[in-house]
Length: 397
Image (cartoon, rainbow, N blue to C red; front, side, top):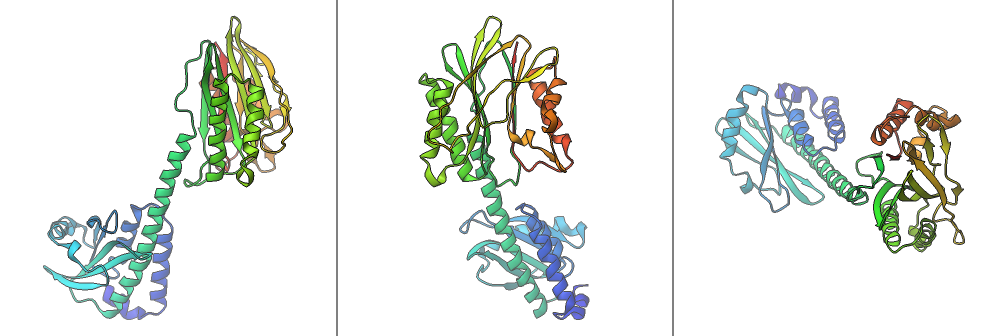
């Protein structure tokens, strides 16, 4: 079949179409494990009877077989046994080479990307390889190597960013007397993006705890830097005895001192103190979506005073609101990934949409309220959200 196809193509439209199809397939995945499978199934049976793809973890590491494909699937196991005895590490990775293996003519094509050897593609067929096939195989090898290297780089970056994202979330969630709480955090966008939303809940001192939910403008390393600065500043100053308003004033200055690296930040920061009737909260909302309180009877009301977001003005003074959560009351705080969830020309929070969602949650646990709000945001539009989402629910037991 390969010979017939080559006779028809002779570097004509079939050749160009073949390369275009192969390029599209290889460019369509960023999964390093999928690239070898795509390569093998592209060349078999057009160029060869079988294909084995080898890769190494680094330029000096040994090659290992990661994918094997044969036009006759029943022969794959036997071929694998033959390949186990072949010394691919001794092959010349500087250029294409040909040799015999039992009943096959084998063409070994090095996979090199950005000047680095990342593996080898071995093609096998009963008869010798025509020059046209060798040229096609080398071209596919170059494209495959670049796709494989891109997929590896993407996977490494995604793994690093996932680790960075985890480092920006609370290491643990404390037990707070009289408090039932639920939190949800969902970053949006591609896997290689670090989200700008965050939350925290931690012990500040004897008999008091702090919580925060914030949204840094933008994504990526710059946003992550501000997120880390905010979370560590909040914890440090809270444990040194600074009140919530004073903490935000100092955090505002710290962000401004970052200069060109600074990012705007909306933040709701609060102190939680258990009292006989439930919980007492001292809150500061710095440009953040308003916090809502739900009474057991279903009544919902805003409980925070809007104040300046952080990282904008040098001369700004923050003031704390004091509210009570009686037994059964719920406080809901979200980022704009919830309030600004868009469906066509409408936002979820238009006409008090978030308050209406919360009113339906009377009697639920904190975790159930958080999940109901998350599901409401997800169901509001058919397309996936393009923004990060964070939800914090505090309920007085």
